[in-house]
Image (cartoon, rainbow over all chains, first blue to last red):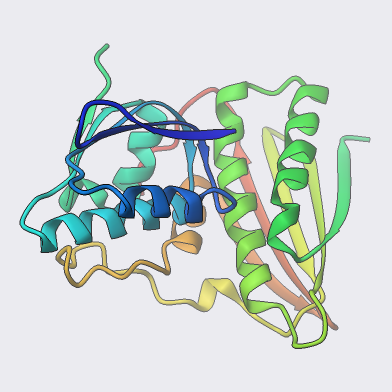
Amino acid sequence: MFEIRQGVPGEVSMSGRLDATQCDAALKFLNEMAELKVIDLARLEYIASAGLRVILLAQKRCKAAGGGVRLINVTPAIHDIFHYAGFDQILDISRAAG
Amino acid sequence: MSERHTAVPGDAAQLPALLRFLQDFWREFKLTPAEALAFELALEEVFMNVVMHGSRADRAPGVKVSMTVVDGGVMLTVEDDGPAFDPLSLPAPDLTASLEARRVGGLGVFLVRQVMDSVRYERRDTTNRLQMTKKMGGLSPAPK
């Protein structure tokens, strides 16, 4: 199961599994937001390269518009994947507390 | 016998069925839940590669997946009858590229190599065979 929802303006949270079957819906959701600033990943349990692509495209779009996306509350397992992919070089990533 | 296998058509809609197969295997052999993630990722990346590269105009490739408990770890084997394709021959992505230059594809196989201890490709007659193993010890994989 995967869920993406908007909280305060500019902020979304993702939970569950962002796999290849969910990435089109997630990308569409993010592309329809006027201004994306923060993605809260506290409850994201799984991500693969299809999901990384969604986040990379969102970041490219925001940077092109003069902004940028921050990923917050990233759990250790998900952080490992971002690190392997070199995303910690091109995105602002904060780990989950604890 | 510590091996289980399944067969599905190479269609992206089969991904949830493969995940259930993996999770059933994990429960049956009482493996550490946290260590399933690496195999879930490897299975998704390899399967989606077959879906993308293995389809001919008239039909999806057939895909066989087997999981085996081996000495000190787990082995995942994915076979397909699509055209010969060695995913390990793909160039590694440039992880130092700027955001603007960063490509959105090509990461999948690279991630598989990161989370598995060994990855081997072999073409056998009309079959592509990718075999991946990972030692299991309750430790998270170190970056390579």
